[in-house]
Image 1 (cartoon, rainbow, N blue to C red):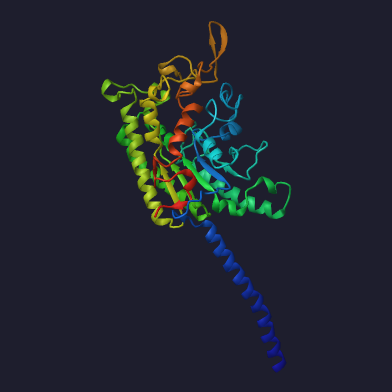
Image 2 (cartoon, rainbow, N blue to C red):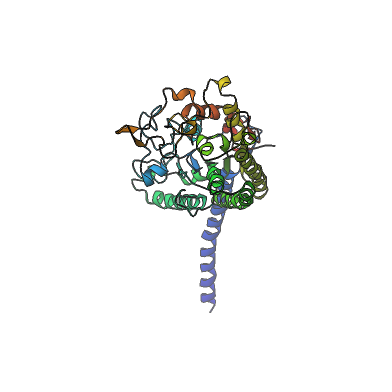
Length: 398
């Protein structure tokens, strides 16, 4: 009996010692992960080093998701910078491209694009026509924010599994540390507002849907935080009432148009949404203490550009560069890149002579020149809350 008791005691010690060592190791590992995942305070002059960017959005930041899923955005898209279609609804680079450049990273590959993609520096889940909440219509993308989140969730988990196997794909995926040190960027909401408005809903009816839209946005931001995301860069939505495709679908009287020519009711909707989004950001800061969240007022930057286009070297701010006919050179049946019949001949709807002096590319999206102008105003933090630059977005404001 004594021998058995001794054996049992020795066995307990043998089991307990490695377990204690393991627990200490795990504790240290957890502490290290917390160090990796905890934003710094603005007491350091060193800039943030984001190893990766994970982007969620619609066509304003889609680098190839829609093209990979439903067919390439053909010529003349991409003509200015890439000199060929590159999955972007622009003549060149988008704001997300400039964010990647500024962070010293390659352009983001679309998560949905399996052809030659390298995700070691992040992934882009944005897809053209996407909304925050799911739309029961074929006019919008099936890849709403909840779907983009689940794609991210699966991507993160599978990346860890594949990297642990050490196979040939390991170098093409982010490290586990990259997910906690990455910059998470968001540009969503535009399509939610237009999806509700254009089926002949009143402004008040659209406003009534915004709380639910924002609730869903907040829900999935919190889910990304639970997955280890810590650095969030959130764009509000732009002045939708200045977009040619929106103006084309409206019948407005003189009292509903501002001095720039933009639709007042639609811009007021965008501002109402942005007011709610900013309150969501405040709420998120209360519930996500380890996060550094930057709210970027893209609306003000874009409206400033459109309303004072000549001052900044642009012209015809409400006229689509790539379009054919219709109001503001936009016709839903003759959109950029489409082939139409004219005088018995097939004609490609092409771009204007000089996209570099135009703001609207195709009636819904901006030219590379306009995107670059906007980026140059947002990158220093002048339009951000807190007012910190992109390179300091991993720091909490004291």
